[in-house]
Image (tube, rainbow, N blue to C red):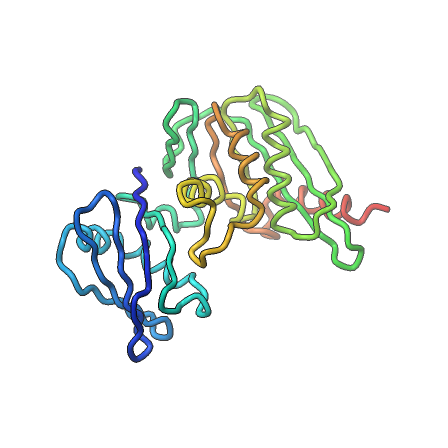
Amino acid sequence: MKLKRFSFKIVDCIAQEYSILIASEEFPNSCRIGYTPLTKSLVFFDTNPISDFIKQHEHQIRKMLHNKRLDTFFVGFELHFILWENKETKQFSNRSKILVLDRRNTVRLIHTYPSEEEVTNVYTDGSFLEKKGKGGYVVLIKKPGKNYQLHTYNSGKKNSSLIELEAAIKSLELLKDTEKIRIVSDSQYVRKGLTEWVPIWELNNWQTVNGEKAKNIGYWKYFDSLSIGKYLEFEWVKAHDNHFENTLCDLYAKMQAGAD
């Protein structure tokens, strides 16, 4: 999938509808859209190649606008944003789908079709106990034909999502010499980070749709660097849903966070 970069500027607001000018170096003209945050109404005012492209990827632009905070809608607001050309939106939105990041070659390939049968499975989980002010995480490794390997760690972080990310990072550190890995987690933060957010942030100076810096940039950059040369699959499982390995990781993560 190819990523295209666009500029975005709010140029007017009439009756709570914001007029937004969109342009790109890849298209000769700009286009204007209207968006009303309260009703989530989106209208197109132009008919030209860039407008046609935006319409073809309407789901992505709508998602971006829906996620944008109300206080960041004002005349004069500017940012850059990225659209995935021909992104399989339904596949990526389906939580049951495994997301694949293949970085064994120079091109970063991202898709939803696992192509490797024999991979090392890694189950990760993190926990932060607010009453104790402590966190812990677990990496459970299952290599093909081998027994489970359990690794537990303390975390000084006070954010569950960041602790989950720490666990995923640690899994790649432990498996630095392993090429094909499937990371199984109950965290969408882990599942989507390298497959959807980081490629966009890299092209957009690590800015979000609200014009702010993405959170935990250093961790994401390091996690991304560990993925180079690897074939990674990201599988999401529902927490507390009788998934054996996830339940085991959850138990040990809480034990580690609660240890004195």
